[in-house]
Length: 227
Length: 227
Image (cartoon, rainbow over all chains, first blue to last red; front, side, top):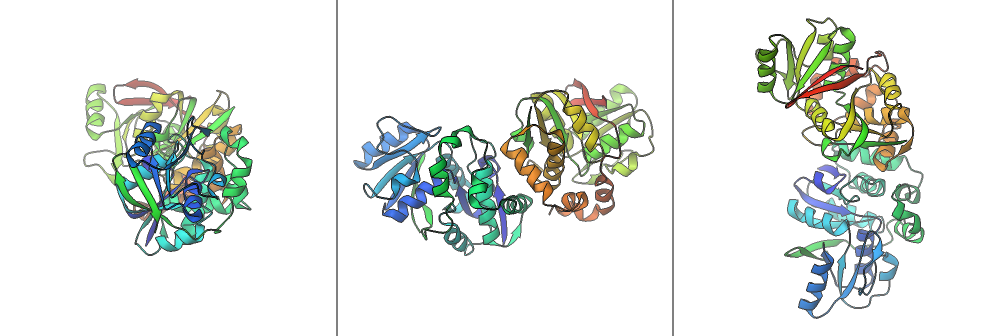
């Protein structure tokens, strides 16, 4: 088995199993939401698509952010701490980078899982069952981010198998930090400065057993459920 | 001053100074060639362009490789050891990834330098004089490679300044290897298996003082000289 890391969505290659990581915060939010009792998460790349989807479904909790700022008229933002107590069964989420990374992974992988530190052990165990694995980092507006690369390295190490150059680099990067909080807190992204509580929340390792998986694709939206 | 690393040419951003790295082997070859006495290196992305350029110039030593294999009819390959004794003043070089990375960097930077471990200290010192710095890794067919990322990390550390996430990751990656030979020898690229002597040659640090710099661009070719 081979394990690869795409440090940005543009580097994603074809693999049987992709694990999408946007650890601060979209994929942590999806993991937390499904663990808390939401039955499905519809991920949309654009705010308008999220609004149209709720109109079409006739239901759904609207959540998301743009550049780490809440969207006017939405029910919730994108802090995973907002999803500990579910407000319904259907979540409609749109985020800046994470949703787009899931959509890209859906193009190139047969099975798309959602990874974070919260479900680290669970997602690695699930990925090991399906052949070659690629961890797709959401990054920030198409750029490398150290928080996603750290999380990808942790996942790649746990998955095992033969590492690509990028996977080996991610594993070495992860090992260079004394803790997950140091690793995902190391980004220079200025938006992270006011996300201290969320970063601490997202740095907790293997506390949730849920493995979110892409179930269906509807146009520019995807539906994520527990696998 | 800010220092950034583009792990692939596609991630290159605008910066006053770019340092292109294809440590195994194109940029090591360019550094060695100019240190040995070649006066200029014309870099071409395609074999046909190299042949046309020699016809137009009426002179030039033709060198290069495609996927680490020599090109029929060319005078030399792309082993830096072939350039220790110059065969002329004008070198026309076409390589798979390095030349293309230089062409990409030429689009986004005002000053384009050529980096390797051979000229590590010299290129870092030269880059420090010109504002923000971006190290552009050639990679392999657009993909991340650990040898270029290692060399980029060594350069970024020496340049100093405020590191982007990617620069910080590259520095941490470089520090994870006990030696340069371990770092640039860690790639899983199967072509590297038969490049042992070249890799050892390219792993020597700061043994040459030359800082190759992009001088002129002529269509799809660039001319590199000592700065």
